[in-house]
Length: 316
Image 1 (spheres, one colour):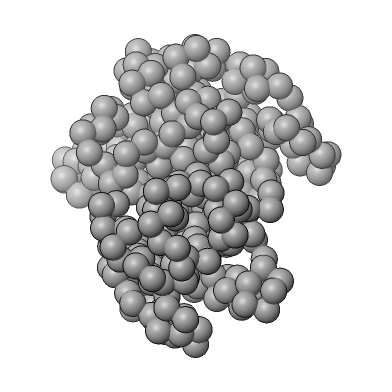
Image 2: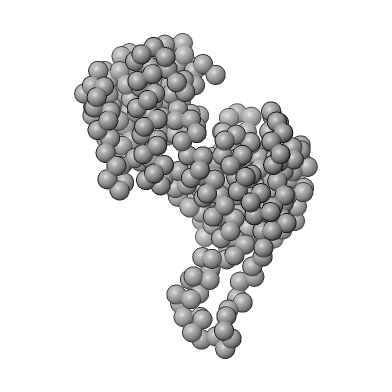
């Protein structure tokens, strides 16, 4: 079989080998692929592996041999899965491979905000502690997360893991989801109640037509004054100019993002805004997590070849 890996570069940092794919056939690797190169590079391949490229009707029609799309991701909003189903193309995502890593990153962003770790590190690096008359520095106010209320929007695998970690810090956990199921950790509430009660709001939703821009001028206005906002899900969930406005006005105490609307960053209105921390969509990327991801994508191909596909999102 002909296999094309269109975005190998998201997987291979640190020396991770993609050779396991070669058990299935002839593999062509591309470190990265521009959208304009997708059709040419797929060519007559039957299997493609990718991350965030758009695979729509035009691409599928231009690549008649294409039978399988494997994703280095959980989200599949860039794939026209309905049209893929019509064409008999299987689309498999990587399920919950990044649950632990993204939940850990979410908590790291929260703790960085409340403990001001990055600001204090930079102050010490710049010599501020050496110049202090006291034995410590109090330049950046800190706070305990103990007793704080975290509101988790979206309660899938990652949201539940964040809830467990927050509970271990003795935080009160609220959750908003379409399918609430008591787990002894979260109190399930409406979206509006979550916004007005939460000291921390953390998004863990897929990007769909319904969830796009769920955080906008109106919903930010309903947030508790001084709340801290976190998004480690998808950038398209957030109206970025509205977020900039509520942080700069002081209505929110700050924000931390691992996903923005246009990636990689290009003229983002949030860049350089005080009290907004941005990491480069790296929550999912520890080596241990990418090894897990590689193994899942290999298992998905094996399942498809045996007639028993797993994680086939065209069946949802």
